[in-house]
Image 1 (tube, helix red, strand yellow):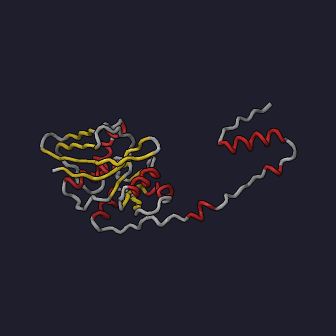
Image 2 (image 1 turned 120 degrees about the vertical axis):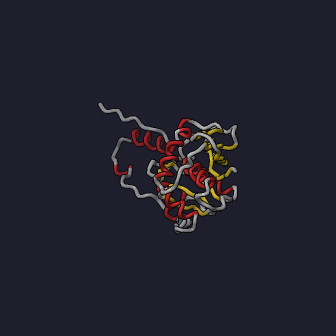
Length: 221
């Protein structure tokens, strides 16, 4: 029997849905990851194994096959750690929940804690557009994920916590709706160009660079 949970792959500035399939079968203990994974995903085997063991769960002592579908889409990054671990636990019967409309991202430490990952904003936007109801993210990604409204975003500290949440043993409050007034208000400025007397050419150069988002090289004589 195979199990499937959802995650996402980053494609440039956008994100695409990925199905994380797991099949556990008889044979010598071994973890195989297929579906065009990069080196970081291949190394997830050891992170996931240690994280599961250190979260009061059991890593299956048998052959574990992980497929990241669609197989022709290159996958990179460490955010597949969490969905791989969740799919393994679901397949081995250690947790029971309906993975439909849930999307998981996060890097696992060896002790089961979740580390922040990159690309949360496009992943959250994609999840909302595709109709996912819940997005599970590392707690350290709160600020970025909090910019997206219209989807329930659950911040997670570690694998043990999300296991309890999916089993309805732990309550975790979703992120509140974004406070746009906090982002739209004018930033405080500690320096004003009008305080500089003279140096018109230098001030104009700085203004042009700032308007275009360019860098400035300061030369001292």
